[in-house]
Structure formats: structure tokens, C-alpha cells
Image (cartoon, rainbow, N blue to C red; front, side):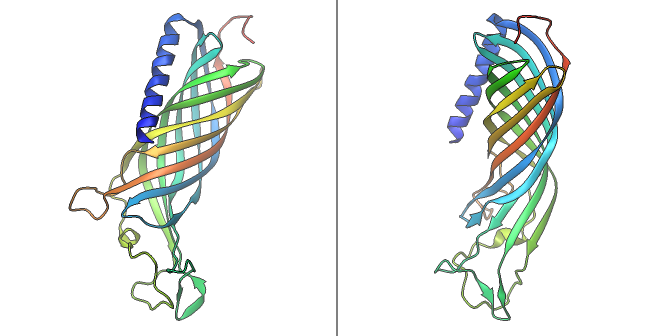
Length: 252
């Protein structure tokens, strides 16, 4: 999957660069806001059983449309977002049943870590359809960096307390380890639809996936985890308004 993302991202950037040399010229610049919901987990090695953790994301969007190459509208999109990501553990016994403490049989064990990042994706975008009025479909992909801001834990785990049954996984080191690497990086990409109205703006709905190439913990031979990278599914809505528009009556 990592190689597929890298190859596709590189190919899309090459396509946009080539289009900028032979396509119909554009100088459209739009800015706006975005917000959405993130489902995330962490790919641990050794494996930690997990469910997807839900969190919020939102921030600013900047888009520069540079060319139209045949029917493809080419643009560069940058965002500056605050995002809540992390992981939620799936704590079960060998019979796939929740685990309880002897002294608290009504509350199953739970653990989730929520980490707040400043995320900055930079994506090449291709769109097909109406530019100024109507519907357009698009895909976009590119690199993303993340800067650690804070983290919090929600758990009822008491070290050493007796449980009715044993946990199926004995990988628990991550539950007491703070994030070690404060810089995250990876590849993000997705697809969506955009509806534009003259003098009003652009309304976008998009689904996106992020694959982390970095780790939140050390991954040398002396470290506990060999891998601890993010996987994130993002659903977001965006509103953009035009700052600069190409003067061309033929653009629809």
C-alpha cells in the first residue's frame, strides 16, 4: 500500500506539472474553511487489538487552480488543520468477551489514547466538470506532515488489579508510553464532489485516507515496537470563496 500511494502521488504531481506547460491557463486562488470527522488507529508491531478511534478535524484550506488540460482541471491544495487522532484498544479474553475486574463486574476494561496534531497536507488535485457553476468531481493526493501538540488518555485500567478473565493480548507497554516522536509524516489522498455557485463560493464533500510513514515510538532493535504508524480515514466538508479568478467568459 505504501508503494502504491507513493507511485500514484508522484504520477499525479508529474501530470499537474506537465499540464501547466501545455494546458489552458488559469490563475484562480480560493481560500476557506474545512471540518470533519476522523477515524484512526495505529499499526503496532507487535500487534495491539484495536477499534477505530473517532475524533474531530478542522482548519483552513487554500487552493490554487493553474491549468485546464483537456477536460481535467489541475490545482494545488494546501490545508492547515487541527486533528484528534490516536487509537482505541479492543480488550477481550480468549473467548472474545469483554474483560472485567473482580471488584467491578459491571464496567469492562477500556483504553483509548487521543493525540492532537497540527496537520499540513499539500496535494495535487484533478477535477472534472464545472468550474464556476455546477458540479465537479475530483481526486487529490500528496504528502502530509503532522506536528504533535498534546495527548490525553481515557482508561479505567488499574495496574495489578485482579480480573475475572485474562486479556487475550499481553501487549500493554503502549498504555504507559507517551508519544516519543513529535513529528509525523505520510501520504494522504481521496476523492470527492464540489458544487459551485457564482458570487457564493464552492462547497465540497470529500473522503480521504492517510497512511503514516513515520512512527510515534522508536523502532530500533532496542525499542519495544518495530512499527507504530497511523492509519486515518477522514470525511470532511469544505467551503471556499474566490480571492482571484481568471478573466475568461468561456469558463463554465
